[in-house]
Length: 110
Image 1 (cartoon, rainbow, N blue to C red):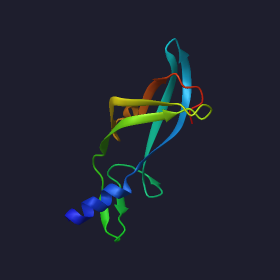
Image 2: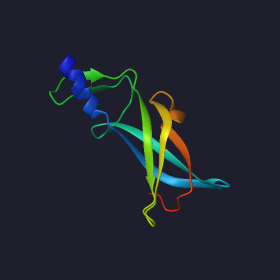
Image 3: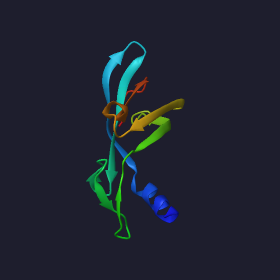
C-alpha cells in the first residue's frame, strides 16, 4: 500500500491559470493565481472514485498542500519578483484558498 501512496502523489499536480492583474494599487498591481486540482484529465472532487495507473480504485477525502517560493516573471523586461517568505495553504474543501492574491510591481506577467 505504501507504494500506491507515492504513485498518488504524482497524479495530483495542481495547475493554475489566469495569472492576471486584477487591480492597480499604490504599491503595485494585484495578481491572482487560481489553482485547479486535477486527477488526470478530470477535475478533482473529494469523495469521488478514481483509478490509478494499475486500474485500482481510490477515493480522496481530504486534499491540502502548501505553495511557496512563487516567482513572477515580466515577459517584456525579463525581470523577476520572488515571494520566498510567503506560504499559502490550498485546501480543496475551501474554494477561497485556491485563489492566491499577490501584489507586484511587474507590468506584463503571464
